[in-house]
Image 1: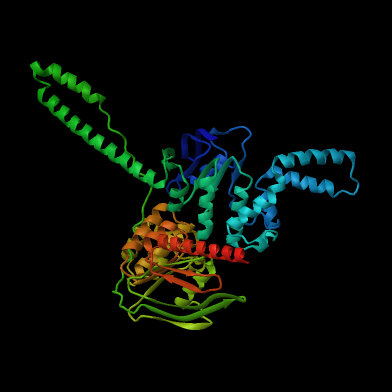
Image 2: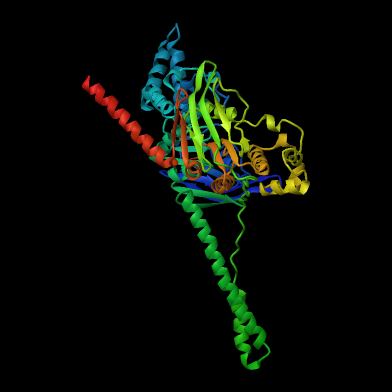
Length: 545
């Protein structure tokens, strides 16, 4: 068990947390939620001991081991992948290294033998002989190929490093597991594996995530941070939302009844306070009035942007024809003879483990990259707006937010442009902020403002939910659902894909395309059945042989 006891954290004059008391118990998974800036990641740092509190303390059951998903993707660059994962159990790794050092000695003494024997005993008690196989299972489950298990970390790409650090956090069955955005940069297969792992995990998990589907799948409880307090709810994210909304509704209804009673009492007192025969009753009602207290209903600190894509022109029947597009990069076939035709009502989710393939296809369709073979043709009625996965160059300048967006606006009026910024939670004074100093979430909201102001009827979005809080994801999700044009997008957010897409395209290893008009959940069910059939057939052939 881990608990926060009267925890207060002040940053200057501002109290981020005030007298927080909460217990996280064994066998439960807690989703830690709250608006951007509410302090979710900060609270995890407090729980992990990496940040001192102003007041109060964190208590952990004696003897329990706490494990944290680290965010520094370069910290272990000089270590082998396998070693990095096993470092998740620091004591076990120390034993392994000390053993190796003793056995490597040329002048092996009696003292060395005694020490080695002690270490071997502790090593066996910690299931040390299973360490590498257990680490390999975690890596394989997260999609790290076996041939990479003994590679040096610096030779892995960004998403592979994220998976290794996640495997490190999960390694060795920790008693308390703290995960800050564990699904970031994971493909959908890795997310599904992690969901099953956490569902079956028997110890304590505290997780911060903007993935609503993930939280609904794994969480037994929800801890909501709002106004420096943490309110605990039994149930997943959807249950929290319904419960919190119901609680506010009940408080408003109770206040309404109290207000009616107050009005009734005030009218009686006003009418009969000067009447001698009614003075006793008036006095009694005054006392009753003094006892009535309205419930304080604080507005939530959560803020929802207003995402509304309104195309200037209705889209025609001819949208996009792609014919035989192929692309090879650094000797690897990324796209192989990809062909499809889009209809005017298509909202297409591109899925599959090859992240580069989706980005390359989007860049080709936007004219930012040339295919090796094949052609594509946009319909004459179409106009496209693009949300790139990497927007570094977009913000590498000294423009203010207002000037930056004005450069893309068909109307060069400041009030007009500020209207779009206001919808995306940039109030008037924010318009003078430099775009190069914006946070990841602010940059995403700027790009969405740019897409809205373009009034395009085709939207192409490459991982738009990265860096967004759940309120912004919900707003974007709803905006795309009601958008009357065509959407092509890639996302790791299960609920976002399921509720937005009516067509699924999966780019397979090797670059081939599977194209199905279906919802995402239906696609996963059919894909799972296909995999089961493949496994059954393969096993049957082995038996026959």
